Length: 187
Image 1: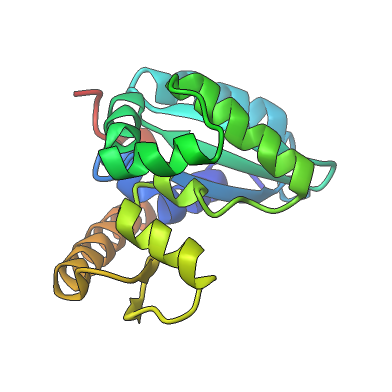
Image 2 (image 1 turned 135 degrees about the horizontal axis):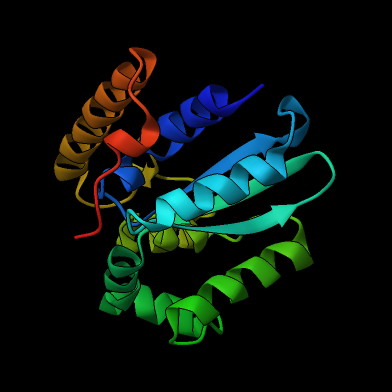
């Protein structure tokens, strides 16, 4: 398989980051589904960089790769939120964004599962991330792109917006547009 399948996978799972709507997205790839996954990823990394989108391989083995797509300015803003910062500091994260991503990566590699605070890197509200951690994933109000513990009405509106924007992005991809044409430029 080639670049169109790669673009479809990235587009359907990271459209909101590519559009500049949210700071980060996590995309999993089965590397054997591609003729040369490493080359493909390398070539897209350079193209995405021109759009202000960075890639970080959070974990990888012979068969799978979990890639974090992010927009640094949006991610810095999300992680500087007072409540997000409190959660991250309590878990030992450094203040620097790149060091925080590296710390997240090391935590994942040490445990073999993504720590719950990854949701802060994906742009989920800190109050919901804290609610998830405190409630061990139970007692949520609604579940959509994440489990919601506060602001149910406002979050439903966000979910609707996310669904609409993602569907529109994926429809354009399916109709022949390239992922790079559809991705917003760095702002």
